[in-house]
Image 1: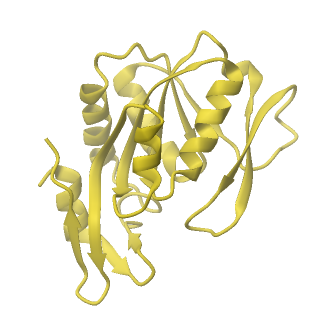
Image 2: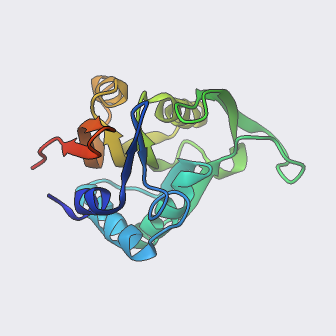
Image 3: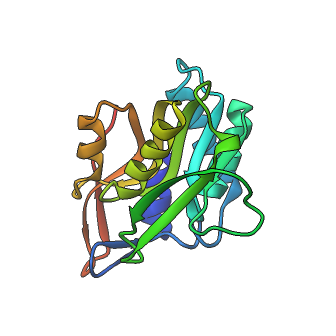
Length: 194
């Protein structure tokens, strides 16, 4: 069992509806030391890639991405879920359905922050159905950039997202892959990883 799996077992809470609450350390209150371990692990797993930017989506992916960016010594760009007055100029746009929030977000990235010269590592906290990742991949495609890899903290291996992304040919590394969860017992079973 790796460091993230151990933390999920210790502090994660399994809820009905295939919900894994990790808000005490990952996506509400954030354990920055844990994020440092995650960033170092992403750096190790993608060491052979020439990455010059990290891309994520607001809000839960930002913390992990910022810490990982320090390990890669690159900037982070995050897709915003709403247009604001401080985004000027042209934007890339994609629609993303949220598993957690059960609605569709129109996500945007300013064209001045992504271009054909960019080699992108996409990072996010969860992977369930893969909608957020497909939206971010679409944005990189619109920019003419290259997705060098995708790093996920927790993948729900029993949902179709991981298989979809891997079938598309993208290098996908998930630090913890949940094979099954039982809200009655609170148990989490992980997929063995090399």
